[in-house]
Length: 203
Image 1: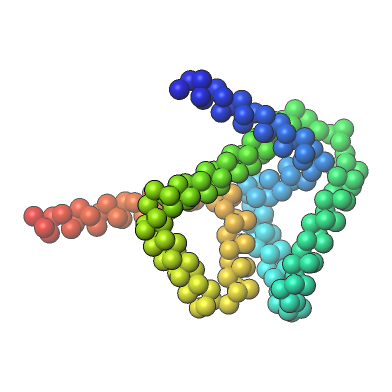
Image 2: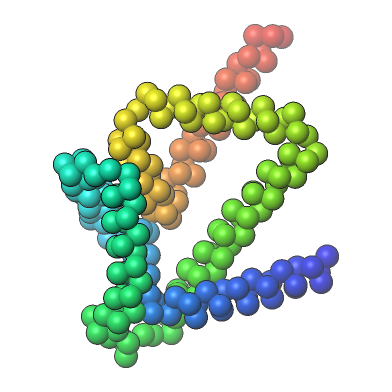
C-alpha cells in the first residue's frame, strides 16, 4: 500500500513538473487569474460577473453562427498562446518572481494535474460500469442525457451557457470562502431534521 502511494506521489510530482515547464510562460497570468478566482479582494466577484455579462451581451448582439463562434474562440486561444509568453514578462516583470509566487504556481499546477486525474478516473469508472453493469449504464446515460436535453429545450442556449460559465468561474471563490460548505451543511441538517420527523411519525 505504501509503495503504491509513493509511486502515485512520484507520478504526481513528475506530471506537475512537466505541466510547470509547459506553462512557465503563463506563470504571472495564472497567478493573477488565481487571485481573481479566489476573491482576494471584495470587488473581484462583481468584476467577474460584469466581464462575463459584457462578453455574453456582445455575443448576443453579434449573434454569430456556431462555426463563426468556434473559429473566433480558437483564434483567440491561438493568439493568447503566442502573445502571452512574450508580453507577460514585460508587463509583470520576471525579476519580481518570488519564492512565494513559485510555490503558489506549483500548487496551481498540482491542482490542475489532480483535476485531470479525477476526470480521467471518472471516465474510466464510466466504462467500468458499462462493462460490469451494462443495463444500469445505459439507463443512467439515457435518463441523464434526456434530462439535459429537456433543460436545454426549456432554457435558451446562450442563457444556459452564461449561467454555467458564471457558476464555474465563481466556484473557486465560493469554495475558498467556505460558502459551498456552509450551504451543504445547512441542507444536510434540514434533511436530517426531515428524516427524524418522519421516523417519529412512523413510531
